[in-house]
Image (cartoon, rainbow, N blue to C red; front, side, top):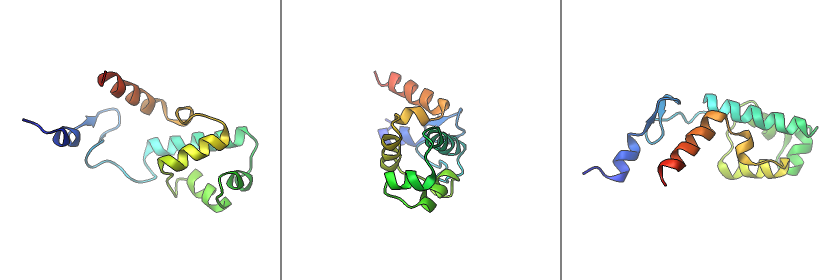
Length: 111
C-alpha cells in the first residue's frame, strides 16, 4: 500500500521538470517565479505606479518592491495576494499560463 505522503513525494510534472513534493526549486530564479514577478511588475506599471508609490500601498519600502521585481526576494502567497489586491487584479491574472493549466488539471483530477 502506498501512503498519501509517499505518492505526493513522487509527483513529477514533466512540464516543470521538477518534483512538486520533493526536490523542487525554491529559488527566486525559478523560471515560473521570474515570469510571475515580471507579470506583477507589468501590472504595477500599467497602473502608472512607481515602486515608491506602490510600496506605500502595500506598506513596504521601495527597495523591497525592487528586490521582488528583480527576483532577489520571493513573495509568499499572502504577500502576493496583498499585492494583487493593491493592484486591483486577481492572483491568477499574474500566474504563468503553464502554472494555471497545472492547477486546473490538478483540480480536475480531484473531482
